[in-house]
Length: 176
Image 1 (cartoon, rainbow, N blue to C red):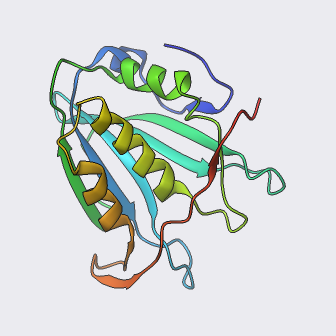
Image 2 (cartoon, rainbow, N blue to C red; image 1 turned 30 degrees about the vertical axis):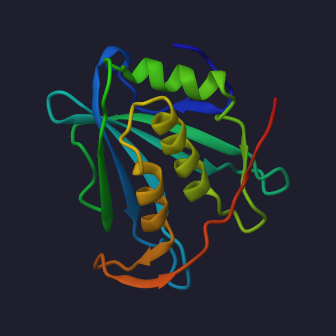
């Protein structure tokens, strides 16, 4: 697997890098703050055996650069009981491993991402991730747009839509 200073393997089991992905679950976590008006969006790469690998692009600790970090972790479930909304996208075509996905992200410099001044942008990152898989023929046509439509909604702790918000775009760039 390729290395990047912007990718953090947290609880990632090396053997999971060779697991074949069967689907992607785009998931919204509930708002972390009472006055928050967006959800944190992540992708669970579903693999055989009821397991997954979590891809979470999050703002880093440097508020000046707003540099994002891609956290990758092995999970013993296909998504989290904490999520408030899930979109499920089966992979199509030839077998694709977790390593293939992570290497593709690094090769396309999708690990180098700058969040907006309000530290939003995970939804745009997830949309681009899905769109590129769709363009490669790995997801059915319209998958990325379906994901985007869900990410334009704001989900409360009970999973109900409580508002809408335009997807704000961070910037892909060389942050090294």
